[in-house]
Picture 1 (cartoon, one colour):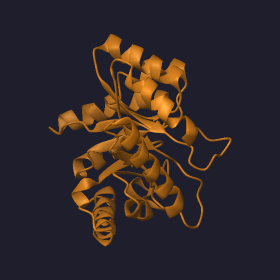
Picture 2 (cartoon, helix red, strand yellow):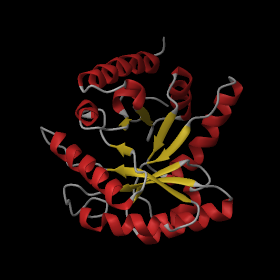
Picture 3 (cartoon, one colour):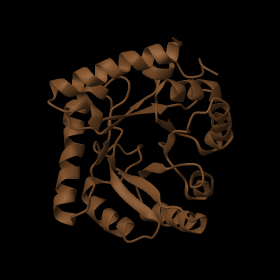
Picture 4 (cartoon, one colour):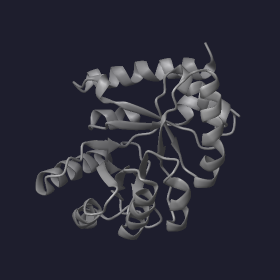
Length: 235
């Protein structure tokens, strides 16, 4: 068993334990392997071990890496993963992201959503998105303000070629992450109630806090170091 496969097995056990502790079905949870700064070979190994969703943070890195991952997987007869874009995105990078990714998780403003929609429509594809929320009001961090979320949802839902799946957040790291995760869940629930939108996806939780995120309702957890090791260690 490779190191990545062994780490994945340990992660699966932790996810299952956390889900059962919260009274949830582990099958409701999706593990996204965050592969920034890790090479194509490591990503292909993770997919071969059973990771079906991979996240990248940088458009230019992904443009070079994703075709290589697909080549490595095709040589082994393995289907490619679903690709999630997880980084802050400038409008001029939408042209790189739309052809490569199945989901963009960091939509936090209308002009970005409009550009993604335009590019997706031109490419003849429907792009899944989540709306990123700044749940801790950190001035240096991306994400829309909670009070602006309903207006952003309504505007993005009106665009062709985008499908809003839910919400995403990267809360400020503190000793107890559960209150921040609970805030995102509450926002999702309220947004679904008042808008009638099907916003079931809650992308929250990383290597150090995903068990707390699962306890608060996460559907997707974004795991980098606990799966791949230190950044740059696997090329």
